[in-house]
Length: 124
Image (cartoon, rainbow, N blue to C red; front, side, top):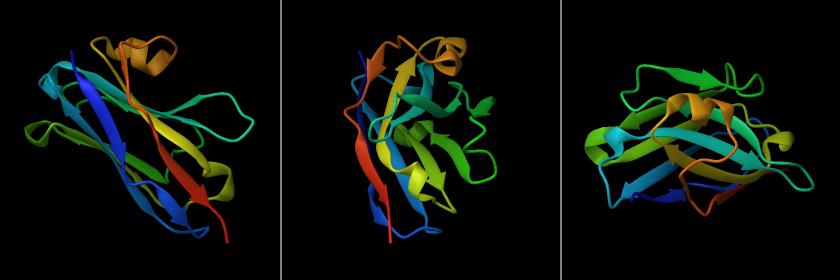
């Protein structure tokens, strides 16, 4: 079974950038579709972006379009989320999750594997 560890979160000023990483171990990442999700303070978890196992398909929530870019390096067993133009409403814990079915990752909900999350705070 794959294990996921997120990193790259932190405190950033509005308009700033961060790159989150989701590092996998225990299983080759190229078998898994990966999604990034976030949960802001007092909010429900929401999907941000996801990428198919090959990297050929990507999905972005409306809130992420034009600002965030998801990518993966299967040789490094890592998926990235490049976030630019960050806003205070992007604040939250960001989780990556894996499932063998890309459609399930796009839909969100129950996925096979979740990381523990990394905190992103956008504040002046």
